[in-house]
Image (cartoon, rainbow, N blue to C red; front, top):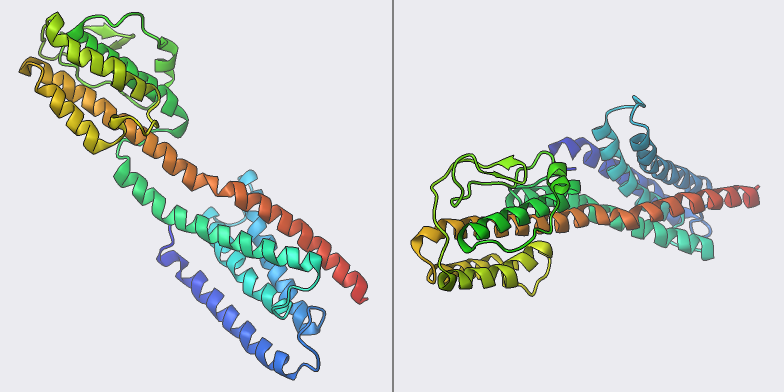
Length: 321
């Protein structure tokens, strides 16, 4: 969710509520015979408002799980979740007079602070990472299909290197994996393949045919592919590989071009493009983990906060009566 001008009204309203709450709290705190207490009338007012905002923020989870509920627009719920959840922190602080109190209250306050902080962190990630994904991963694919797309890239690379070096031996991939990669085509024009050639059940477009290299000429690209590139395609997140970095990968392919005749350069360009796509898939995985991983902290803390907050409210009302 991007924080844009559509959040302006929510931000302004939150600031006004915070300012009014402080304006009420200051004379109350100055004129109170004892320190401000959560059990006072004003303290209870702040507590009820703060906990109500927390409940609204928590209700977003129920709204997502039951999308058929026509209770406002999803974007409105998201903005309310962000700003009302953030607003609950100062209200609860005013409720307790900035004192953490006993054990349960202290646990609640720290839970609230950490939950709000994790929410702010998540909002920042959701604001910036989609733009970063667009620039860093122009070939973004469906996240669940990344493993299948990697198999397609490896199969394509196998065919490309075999077109100039000869057979590499039995393929480790399966045609079923290629068929599952819906919506993404890892195939590109392969210069070594004549018109009408079919590889793995997929027709490859016609291109200029080249011939197999001699045994001596094919040794450098074969060793490079088997020792470096294929292991990288199988485990592209291995940082020790020089192909994991765009600069060192470019240098590696540039050095390999000097050892091969110009007729094989187009195949090297195909292989370099495949490595670029493999790096983009790894980058997409990393950004996806950041974009969604913070929820593993935020959601359990939110649920614990609501549960303990309800217990605290019941106990406070019971003892106050």
